[in-house]
Length: 264
Ligand SMILES: C[S@@+](CC[C@H](N)C(=O)[O-])C[C@H]1O[C@@H](n2cnc3c(N)ncnc32)[C@H](O)[C@@H]1O
Image (cartoon, rainbow, N blue to C red; front, side, top):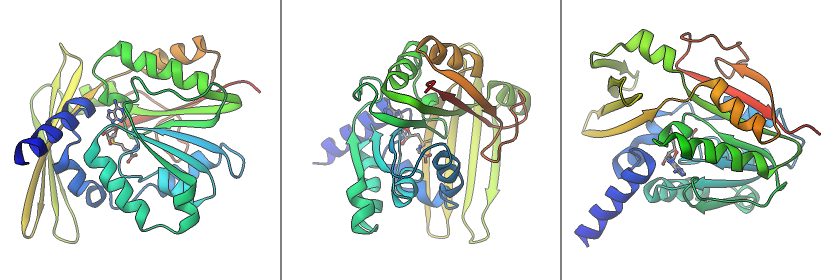
């Protein structure tokens, strides 16, 4: 029993770039501000009651507010620990939000949807950065593009390499965030320029507990991603530095947001 739990955790971490039981246990506390801003920005791209797919949906931080707003959401997630949290979070929602949300326990690298079946595909907060192989990132973008109906959008949020290099350099750098409620997150970033990745060791401390977990982040360039999507018939309509609509400038923000559209 204990071994199978360890195996499950190891499999989760390997497949997802770090999102095993430890990360899942504190994820909603770490992102306690939730995903309302992202959900509102994504919702503004689509008509009421649209069909949305989120790749790497985590605990439903963004997927659940989108379903609450009336959209039909397919939430694709590979880590079984994150899927368990997502199902728990959904359990607290009203019956119609639950009915509009499908949890798809799958790896985005081989997951498929019907061509033309989605009005929006979202892959946010660096979920694409969890894929270490560039060929997988390209494959996901190309396949997700093909699911879009005419006029549909693909929105990808990924870590900015220029910010990582410029602000964090190559020495391990601990960044400490103190919370008003006494919790503290210490994240130690290690940039590996040869592998073109960041590895981040997190330590989450609450008054009575300490939780440690790691994640690996691979970089993708906004133009590289746009080229894959454009090759699949999309056009880039915006490249932003945040969810407030600030235009992207390399090295200014930790993440960028690309909005691409299949012409109507
Ligand atoms: C930083 S979290 C973002 C979660 C969610 N999008 C949000 O905004 O809160 C990245 C998520 O992507 C998931 N993930 C990583 N690799 C994946 C894959 N190959 N297929 C599906 N999900 C994956 C992780 O397990 C994790 O839940």
